[in-house]
Image (cartoon, rainbow, N blue to C red):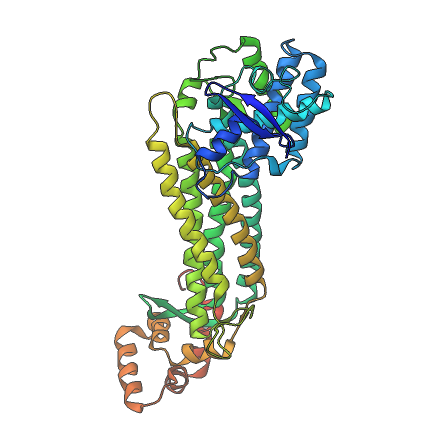
Amino acid sequence: MCFRIEKDLIGSLSIQKDLYWGIHTQRAKVNFDFGFAKVHPELIRAIAMVKKACCISNKELGFLDSKKAQAIITACDEIIEGKLNNQFPLDALQGGAGTSTNMNLNEVIANRAIELLGGQKGEYCLCHPIHDVNLHQSTNDVYPTAIKIAAIFLFRTLSDKIAGLQGVLQKKEKEFSNIVKIGRTELQEAVPITLGIEFGAFAEAISRDRWRTFKCEERLRVVNIGGTAVGTGLCAPKEYIFLVIEKLREITLLGLCRGENVCGETANADSFVEVSGILKAHASNLIKICNDLRLLTLLGEIIPPFVQTGSSIMPGKVNPVVFESVIQVGLKVIANDMLISEATSRATLQICEFLPLLSHALLESLKLLIKANEIICKHIKTLKVNEDICSHYFDKSLGIITAFLPTIGYEKAQELLKEFKKTGTEDLKKFLKEKLGEKLVEETLSPYKLISLGYK
């Protein structure tokens, strides 16, 4: 196998000639070989967008010649399009606040640019990873800016997926609007409701999640690009600092802006904690809804679609596996929220050293929730109701007597229940028809009366 020799502060290293990454990436690949997940492709793509914006700014201001700059821009575009994905081998968990990932991009872009300029990989006199690709930048402004860009794109997708789930739940609310059933509190029978209003409550919670996630972009649009190492812009020209954010807006089509206090944006990562809290809220709602749907499946009131065999030993067993999988996604997101909070709080002085863990956890949560919403939306769409089971629980529940209190009063209702218990039968609704008249019972227990706000 053919190799090229590259050098750095530590010494020399052999790199496979066909690889686009260089010595910094190779050392990081060995140093951080945890066997964990790789850096998210969305983050790689976002860093390439940042590099492109920096290159265009440096080109327009005369810091890079046009031919070299165009090669760098083309290399960035290829990465943004998803090419060269196999050239980003680093573990997501790494020291240096993201420096290794930043250098991985610098080296891959530089070597691809060298190819476009007619040279061989490693001929850094044609295009240098630091002097050219990383010109007027630091990991400390590139990396956090890229995390925010990647997160905004994923938040937009998540908001759309949540909207889809909200729509499906609202359709079920309408579909089940006339199906009366018994409500439950403390895992005990309570007062009568409709299955429609039960699904309407799910839809309402999800609608809040949709709005919250939509607004997260406002919390992430303030970036620190141009701040270089600690936010002061040291080693970057003033005209570049003002131009690069404009170019980044044009490339991403996002409403990004440079922070008023760039040192503060560089030293603090609390905005990630804030938006992670929104993801945790959505995860909590998904867990609650899926657990409720499991309970309704257990009771037999709803019939989820049969998607796979439930047991390796019990023939015919069907389990609510999709609901269970989404609950586990929710638990993972809640755990990631703790990691994001911890990583943020452990930042010291002018930098957040643990951005690699933070970024992986945040982007992982977003991607998991996007898929979870897709999966549960599809599942609920084909969910059916067992009206006979709903009626069975409803007709025999002592809780339905509560609906008659405005008409007959508490004492009369209590007397009727005592009398009913003496009959030894289970159909309270039939008993009430005999005692109060069919018309009153049907009217009182109608879907309209059960869900109307108050009584006249």
